[in-house]
Image (cartoon, rainbow, N blue to C red):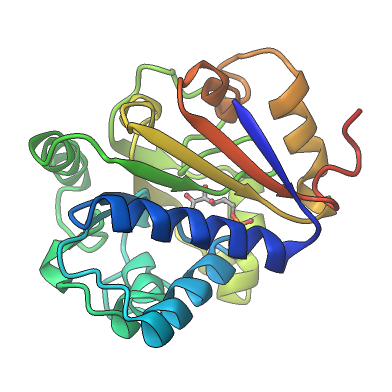
Length: 242
Ligand code: F6R
């Protein structure tokens, strides 16, 4: 696993954007795996600004998001579909029919998870998967203890993860209890993985990722087994690491 150090959040976001843009120029039909949350907002901001300034086109790009809350429709401002539209897709020339997320407002979430896995498989491999890091080591919504062999599935969110996301909903009670997520095996199938980590609050998780054992109790550790995984971390995130 390769580690790239950045001075701060903005530099991390710029390095990540330069990397994604270079990959896109190499392969205009690139399949990108997308994450939501606070961490990739700067990356998406940089991609939008580059699109405006340099005209980088996303017309041939397909995207596959990691996850979506169950029970929220795409019009709900807390849904990950809404997040992706407002932070990225509405501001670039991507064809929205090429942007994929699990649907959160379906009757049968289990069938939707299976269909999402199938969709990703039928599309071939994701070329570059963007990831954030959960404070408890989760990737996507794969909580500690999720088997490394898991494919897309329905998860019961832990209180830790719901509490971390309460900042977006205003209160813990409003955070959905379940989500559909790519599995760990789904993520590991990507040809390349780019994880972004910023801030002191992520430091103990990042150090465990860099220095601890590979174990299902800490899902992100699986990235150490990926042949092309890269972490871009800022100084604050690295502050507790030896
Ligand atoms: C988001 C996702 C999550 C986040 C993680 C970090 O689609 O799947 O795993 O990447 O919870 O979230 P932030 O970036 O808000 O700290």
